[in-house]
Image (cartoon, rainbow, N blue to C red; front, side, top):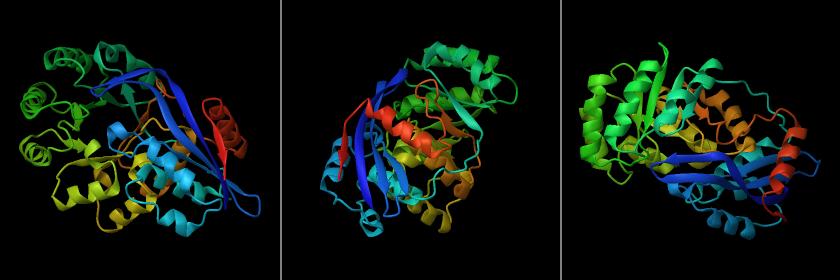
Length: 329
C-alpha cells in the first residue's frame, strides 16, 4: 500500500500536572494508507518516552527508512523496541477498507486534576454518568494529599470508586505510609493504587503487593507486551494498566490472552492519544471486552472524539496538519 505520514504537536487544552512534571502538549505521527482500489486507512503513532515507550525521534527515523509501499510482512517485522509504531502501523493496516468503525461507548473513569482541584472537578463527569475517578498523587506532600483525599472521599457520591495514581513517585517508606493510611481511612472506597514505586523496583513492588490489602496496578512497569510478560513470569498478583497506543501491535495482547492472562486483571487507559488512535482502540475493545471502567475520561486535557465517518478521518488528518508537517512516500 502507498502511504503518507505527518508529524503533529498539539497543545493540550490545559496543562496536566503529574509526579513526572507538567504536560503542555502531545506529539505524534499520523499515518494514511491507500491500496490499489483507492480504499484508505489511518493510524496514529503517539509515543510517551517519559512513560517507557520509544522516543518520537526513533519513530520519525523509522518512517524515513521504510519503503514507498508497505506490506503486511514489513509491518509484522517492526521491532519490539518501537511499540507505539507497531500499534500505529498495525491499526492503520487493519483499518484499510474497514472504515468507519461502528464503535460503542464504554464506562469511563474520569481523570481528575492533582491537588484540591479534584474536589470540584468530579462533578461534571459524574453528572454525565461517570462513577469511577482517578486522582494523581505524588505531586504534593503525603500529608497535604491525604488531607485533600479525606475531603474528596467525603464528597464523592455513594457507589463511586476512586483510583490513585502515583506515577512511580513514592519510595518504599512513603508507599507503606500511604497504604497504612488507606487501610484506616479508604477501605472499600479505593479501587486500586496505580504504580506506587518506580518501574525498576521490581522486588519492592512484588513484596508490597503481597503485604497490603489495597489492590495495586502496574502502569509504567508494563508499557509494552514483553514487559507485561515478564511480570506474569515473576508472579505479579495485582492488576495491569494497558495503554494500547503504547503497548505494541494489538496481536501481542491477543496472544497473552490466549495464553491465559485473565481479562479481569486488565485496565485499559488513555495515553492522551488523538481521535484516530482512540477510535482504533475502541474497535479493539470489542475483542478484549474490558471488565473495568476505561481510563479514557481525559477530555479536560485532550478532546479525542470517536470518528464515525471517513469524512471525520479526513478532517482529523487536515486539522492536525496545522500542527506539523506532512510527508509522502
